Length: 244
Ligand SMILES: [Zn+2]
Image (cartoon, rainbow, N blue to C red):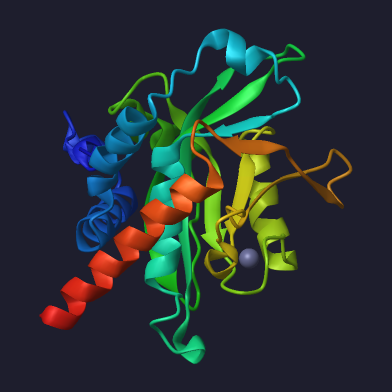
């Protein structure tokens, strides 16, 4: 399901660098079983019978960023796959990916960005996603769902807390050049606990010298529910690896 975006109508129209990127995303999603998250989120939602109505969202106008459980779980799992208690700390590496979503109540006091999905792009020492052409990127994701577009990026800070480093700041400035409302999500997978998502969502201020943290919530999924789901996921992942 998660890789359906790779099915292109006119593949020859897409520059090679983007094809390569989409292949990387597909490979990581497959290797980490990230597309299984659809099923898990379905189960969580069924179990808790969560009904989010338009009214629920509108009475909390102070929440600027709504993160769908699917996007959060994919990001958390990608980050945890490369930095967790089963791996020696010296071998922990960072991960990076793209966020797709939509904007709601645009240009009103109730404006919110809805983070619908996370696309794992890379992991390693020098992780980056160069968005050279926002238009092409947007078109690629439009193939999946015309309502969604690239709304930002996410990366991990294993054990050193969510914030924007100088490099992160420069990277995000480029994203905000494409779209001023772009968001930078940083996750510290080690910080994830029963009462902490380990997440920070940031945007650079108009002065282009400082940034601020945006208010966010993972829609309909408590920290406890997400922690339990992630813990189970990790156990399965590492159990499978050990049995191979
Ligand atoms: Zn960083």
